[in-house]
Length: 219
Image 1 (cartoon, rainbow, N blue to C red):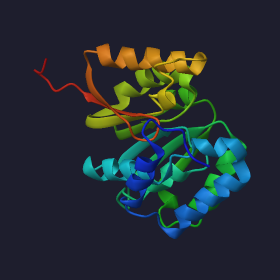
Image 2: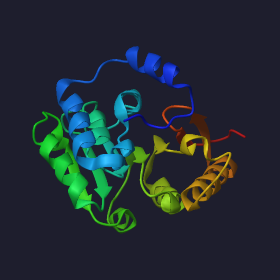
Image 3: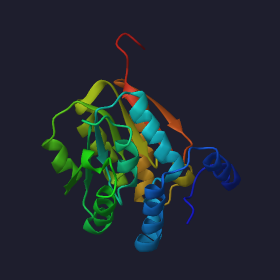
């Protein structure tokens, strides 16, 4: 099952073949997700984006990560692998079926103990959390992206980064068809105009935006 991306499929295949391969457990998690989650398996971040997340966690020297949107736990495991032994990843979701798969695979991973799942509305969970978080990954319901962004920005470490998935909607930001597309367009414009931050939009998968606080004194 191929994720709808924004670059030609042949380029996506080439990029994947020139990205560090997944360890066997993550390969098995992908296969299990495709087998058990049907069309929803397209929500899984996959090898290239997973490696990007892992590298970002490593590059910022993250010790604490917050994830909004767990699904079957693939991205959480990818990021947890880059955390130190005493690192922590808090992940939020509302789907007991998908997160049951996540728990199953976290239990088999040497990094699974670093992950703590909060099952319930993410905005409610965020209210109970204390920062700072070195990296926040937003990959949840699109209509709430703005609310998630405003809720997590105060919890972001000074040198931290927010990573937002699906910001190009497979190209639908240029030809919006439904509420999720329009919500994504609104979110992208809001962040671009937000004087508190700087951002870059990457054509990885169906769009990944990286956001960090604007350095003091910059314009």
